[in-house]
Image 1 (spheres, rainbow over the protein chains, first blue to last red):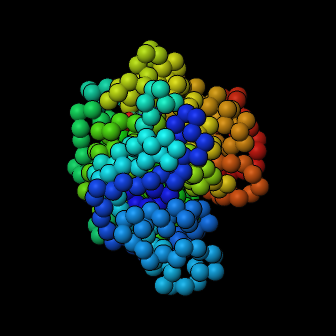
Image 2 (cartoon, each protein chain N blue to C red):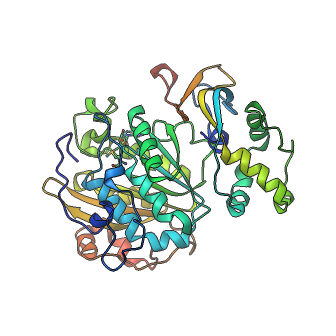
Length: 122
Length: 278
Ligand SMILES: C[S@@+](CC[C@H](N)C(=O)[O-])C[C@H]1O[C@@H](n2cnc3c(N)ncnc32)[C@H](O)[C@@H]1O
């Protein structure tokens, strides 16, 4: 699971008002090379929750993102490289995503998060 | 579709590529869709069948439009073996370098199979075990430029809907519409302004009513592929938001026979009357 996906996932348990961002419990993570495409990064930037990305990347040991980001930074190749790495190359392989409100753990196995709810959670 | 003993013998346009052979006269071109021999299998996971092939053929038929569309995010709901999302990733591939792919399935065996199939073809999609798009819906709202779905569409007793394993791949409840009717509003939520939805339906699902439902949500629709097998009559329908002139291109009715099918459906007469094409 890329951090792009983590950035898009939220806990939707019944009654939870802000199930975002999910806390990452990583038992195993990985770095995998991905094709760099500046246009993709520029397209997706406005949709990214930046603080969630920064903190997720830190949890996985990547601390090179600036705490705050603004569109003008997308001109910088250095910034784009870091954004690319955090968003697409850092993966959670094994572990869990934890609902910030209820503590419910959504398991991640072989890089695949399981967001299915139990019957009493829908 | 029809349980574990499906007969997948219908011949169609992409059959040659599926087998990993190149078309005559183009021996050097790479296959543009997933190869059956590289598609992973599991006893609890739906194997690519006529409906899967029809959906991939529809995407191939619309490929030129998809390349112009330049999607950023694409999603398959219910990816099963991974045959369709892998094919989509391959066919858009290097020509749409901005495209990124997501796939969901409610069956954990299916997502695992999808993962292996993607890997065997050297393409990537982010995979999530999810009920339609649960967990993604909130944040991905309005972000999907392409959504594809081959839903469980077989009319079955209601009790069979929502069961685990392979049953979930076909059991569609009354008129086969139980899951489809849950998918439509979610797809509407997920699609971007320029977003396109491709969905497989069966005659018994009442596709004209589905188009009407989507019409009420502001969507135009067009049948891209229709195919009759011994046991079922399939249609792959494309939906798009009918706002302004954005994203309109292509011929009015691609493929032969579509017009005559439409003419049998009074509910779809708007398609013939309005000037848009997609
Ligand atoms: C007809 S199969 C299609 C599989 C594959 N896309 C193909 O075309 O070969 C339908 C798939 O949808 C999945 N599915 C059924 N209900 C679902 C739901 N509520 N959410 C997500 N996936 C679902 C099934 O597990 C199955 O893999």
